[in-house]
Amino acid sequence: MIYIEFRTWYKASQYRLKQFSEGFYGLVVKCLLLGLISLLCYLYRVINAFFRRETIAGCIISVILFGVSFSYATSFIKERKLRVEAQYRADSLSYELSKLTQMFEKEDTLIVNGDTLRSW
Image (tube, rainbow, N blue to C red; front, side, top):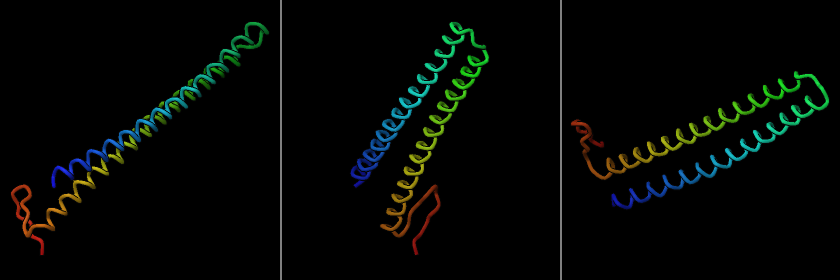
């Protein structure tokens, strides 16, 4: 019985990990593409500034936009990672609580940390 419960929990945790990695790496690829597009825009500005003698202000604005988009992408990745970890912890706590509830329903008494709990 315990082996089956552990196996079920293990499969669920592996599924969560797979879901997290697929979503996380997809997000990383999207953010890298966004950064690449921003970098290409920046290089275009630099080339225009040197060959057309435009102002350097356009280059500075491009650098600022690249920095902002990169920091936004990294913060978004960190936030998603924390959200998935929190969901995983909540699921594992819910599983532990249901397992404890099942044990409590099976027997009349349950000893937890030296205290005797009884179902009435």
